[in-house]
Image (cartoon, rainbow, N blue to C red; front, side, top):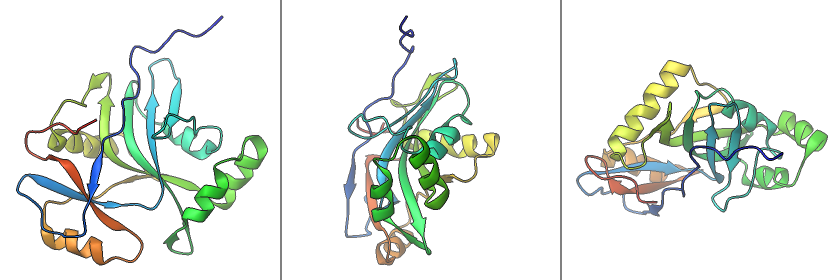
Length: 193
């Protein structure tokens, strides 16, 4: 017998525009771009979880520590994230790539050696409420509340966001990531999907 389809599904990921200039148009925000892979993460009220790549691939079996982290989300909640791996104080994209094809005991072993983390930058749904049509500023505020209310900690991280060009310039100067402007105004526009 097949399981019933969920009442909601993970949406298409938000699109962002990479920038090399920290000047931000009024009403726009910037976030650092992480050297990892996109992950849409959701938990349904019946306990099911999904961790999906930007292209729709199931990532849960290769990253059991990420699947477990998604189980800590409240019912009917979904986030847009970047999956990253750190090694020796730097983002280790190559370690992340090595983990992509591990399953079962090999995936569990890899999870202890090179743990993946989720950097959440967009709240898509919370407690059953669809936020994808809400302004980015409301989505990000809901994400901050979620982190505080649920006590989300490693492997979860909250992606910093700024409307300050000085902070965006500092991110551009950093050695292990680049700045990425969101393609939506922070005040009144929903994130494009």
